[in-house]
Image (cartoon, rainbow, N blue to C red; front, side, top):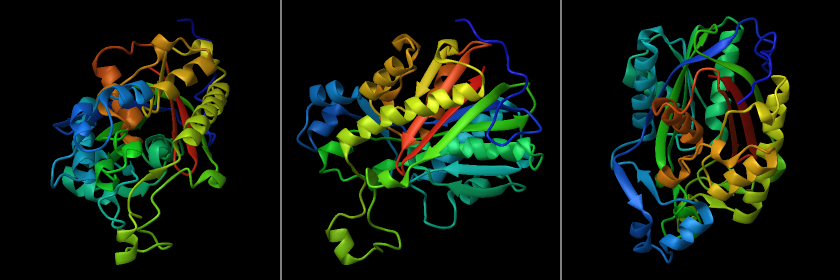
Length: 342
């Protein structure tokens, strides 16, 4: 597809002094596959109902004793291997997750120990489904400013641990996974051209987990009331997802002096096929340019776009010079869009 001329320098939110590239990606998906037929035995639902409304046919579920940090570490090692970079070279690890192993310490610190990245500074970012793109933008700005040379940005979730398996409106949607990207200064890899991040706290109640924080600490009453499960207002989430990702995508492209017509591939948040296709239509991007993994993995929240990006790369769908637009919507309300020149 045609591309606009390259902008004078990668356009970012922080006026960088150095360009930033993705030099390696990796992902991890648990072995266990939970199909729609399996869910028919757990809740009152059908394969046809799930596929028609979401496009999801199956999802992956972490094994007993397999945690968010375990999946994140495996994805990180695969990304480092592809980048031909040792864990000891990593300066910073940022994990985007809404399902950390613990409230503290950070999952990033656990990942650091598991992969042997002894030099790395570590912290988590909690932007729900937008967590990976938030983590990547933060890491890219550390590199752009000269504070770091090598950053691991990770999106990882064990959503099966916070689902109410009696609630058919939510338990059919989500799965477990992790993905990672290695970022470095320069234009030798896939250059990050522009990013837009946004938040709207007025819509914080659309997707949330009421219990477990300081507002509703864990207690017998909170557990009895099922306050420690994910809750979601589905119809309003659908509406806001399409609107927010559409606006964010246009803003990210504008910062790169690009338009939707320049986009080769759009990799939206893999939440619901109807949301994804509605977004493509809204941006006037051909539906066959929309990369889809939601049918196989469900909604993996912060892992969603990086797992899809890694798969698209490994399968050879992405070609040198392609313009890739990633865009995500999540609880908070959070929204993020990133443009990468492959």
